[in-house]
Amino acid sequence: MNLKRFLIAASLLSIVAPLSEAAAGPVAHVGQCPDAAYVTLDAGNIVAADWVEYRPGKVHTYQILTQSRVVDATIDLRPDQTAAHSSVVLSIAGQPPDPPKERDLGAGAVYWSDFIASSVMQAVARAVVLNEDRAEIPAASLFIDARGNIPVERIDATDWKVTYHNKRYFVLTDAKGCMISATLPDFGVTIERRFDFSRSAYPLWPAYGAPPDHAYSAQDVKIATTGHTLAGTLTLPPSNKQLPAAILITGLSPTERNNGTPPWMPFRDIADALTRSGVAVLRVDDIGIGQSTGDHAPSTTFDEADDVRAEIGWLRAQPNIDPKRILLVGYSEGGLIAPMVASQDRAIAGIITLAGPGVPGPQLAREQTEAAVNSDPNIAPADREKEIEKELADPLTPRERVFLTIDPLAYAEKVRCPALILQGGADVTVPIRSAEKLAYAMRGNGNADVTVRIIPGVSHSLLPDPLGLPSGWISLPAFVTSPRVLETMTDWIRARFG
Image 1 (cartoon, one colour):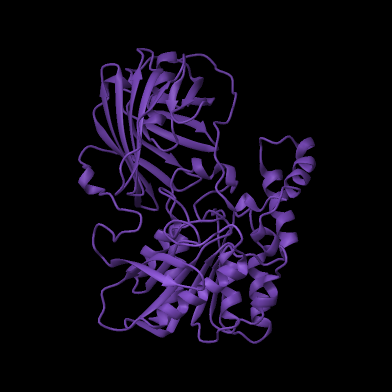
Image 2 (tube, helix red, strand yellow):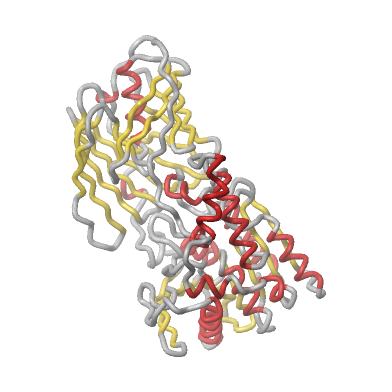
């Protein structure tokens, strides 16, 4: 079986093959485009910025994603706007940069990265050179030995449609063929050209640090448990009063305190939203991961529940935390652990489950595998049943074996505190019906404060993602947790805990 669909899968360039058709008039090529910043916005919030400079035979792009991941790339361009060679330096805010990655990109292809907005402009530039209404543009990845084909369609003199990695970009160019904007309607994302957007307008933010605007503080903490020490971050809003607090609980895979590395950091996004709304937030590295000590390999769901209890005890002892207003926020497997702990600790003020399972482990494993395989366009229909059985037969880790023995409803029915059950409508990892099953179990024993919210177009990643396939998460156009997810959480907490 394959519970590892809880993980982000690495993405390869997919192959798509529409046929080219004949021609319209030429437009000046992108080498004449002015230096500019291309700002990516999700629900009006800036989630990335790409500063692009064109020089004869070269393009330099400096991309910052979620204020934490930097992609600094220089690409040699041929006169026909294909890419010859690239040099890419990756770094994370507050850490030394990686060594440069040098790549020869071969013949006849444009460069492509889902991280880099100027890739879209380069695909259009190549289509302009080919002077065709519909062109199939070969693309070479900047990071791995993979190539694919990008369909580019001219709509009119300044409008284009670029399709790649299950994304449709509707691109607006100026009269020279330089990109002004791109819209991704399926994701609610836009990319806009700015001439006055400096790097200081989008400052770097270390993954565990306080935000650049200093809206709240971030403290490194150590929490002693039985046999190991948990390392984490406590974010605190400015206040002279005792604060409500939330503990964030990670999913099934071994992860550090942000439940992902830049640019995908859902727990930093959640901590930021909750702390700005007046809630202290504790998030920690899993046992044996990051700066936490111990051995993760033999740990189980029950062991992590014990760690959460240690975190609760530590928080209750802090003078600036109200011990009567501590909430648990669990993602995926954490959405099972939160009810497990709350069912035995009646002093917990409330729980939020994010894509938490509502069916027994074996049933969850089969349903998530079937949903993912049957939704994957790269697996032929005739091969899907065989692939499902193959994945279900994969070896299990100790944690997975224990996870499969747990019925989440047995704990949910014992939860008496207020509960928000939140799930994305495009989740193919945890069955959507889990949300109402959990709610029914909680309400069945008299819990009158249980709220269910399904957010359309959001996958198990908690990102805007209409397809939901884990193999495609890395190529999503924005890496910040869905604003609707964050707003739903903060509104629910504010209504109950001030």
